[in-house]
Image (cartoon, rainbow, N blue to C red):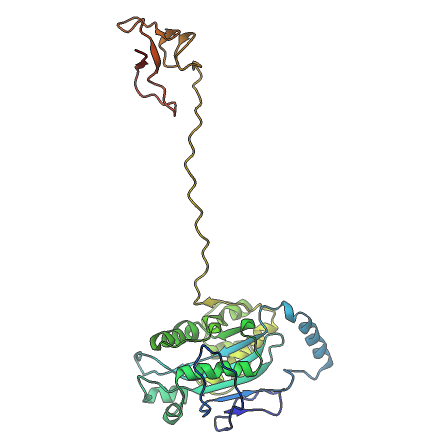
Length: 344
């Protein structure tokens, strides 16, 4: 269902009871097409995004707009899935039952648009009492919901209708669970192709801790720590996403740079350099060397044996014999054994 709010300055979540039809949607051809029977709901503002009335604020915003092209992203889309669950143990396979999103202007922090659709679980179609109490989602809402593949197509069409360049978009979550665990698992388990922009995300905990210090806190505690009032119902996916978006704007206002913190795409590793060929050690003769390796001239070989020309002069049975070279000489100049290589 498509709901167009009349005032763009104030962010209004889509009304679950609202109805209408999507006049035209541009779909990612790699994704299943959304049904014209709109069981989810979408809303976006057609007016200029987030214009403060104060002249000084408008001037500050103009300065921000000048550096718009220098920003890493043009828009953030904040998501917070709700999934099947039961008290005291994990349900398997866990499936998304609420698919909400809030679009945020990366230049101003303004909340521009919201999206929500309920998703019908396939493996555990009947919600547990604990799940209904925790999330506020009722059985009839998931019964009339869409398949996850269709929810992804509807979300992609919502971004296309808002004119969002997806290569300049970053998904924002509170924690890594939504993209790294829940959506990735269910899409893999069911063989569903999802848009590539879900393969990397900003875990808002990281820039929040850069602004407010490290420490364990849940989303509601972080909102209050930032000086904001919690708005809506805790564990309602759309309300959680809206509060996360407001927290994102506050972190941005404090000058913290927002960048990707998690990714499902393995980092490119440089190819290993080829192993260098072994280099032969230079053959350096010892200090008492003979230029002819114990051949030619007269004197003593570096091994201490006297010679004249190529004739051994050491007294003994080999005296007077001609030799080719000293057996102690090796390419590495290391002594092997005290004998000569005889010429004949």
